[in-house]
Length: 126
Image (cartoon, one colour):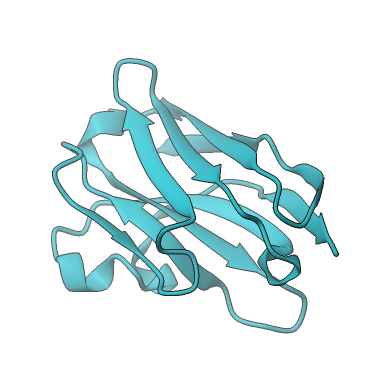
């Protein structure tokens, strides 16, 4: 089992920045590929970014590429998402997830993730 707890969400004006954190406990954090997803009511969970266990591979959705940066500190069992140049359309609940899958093609698909946090709300005002 892996327990994930997100933090760092809040209300920010368009153009501002936020840094989300996801603290992991339980099984070895470094053994999992980690991802960030977001969801708004009535819609499916949307891929934002993912990072491999050794930080050697990262991927971003087209809507956030160049604005968001995913990173992880395996020594601290923590995943991060630095969000810059935020837009109102970035408003959502943000979730971190952990997957034991080894197929990079699966990392953008929410059903491939084994564990999820409870989510943190990000609201961007115009």
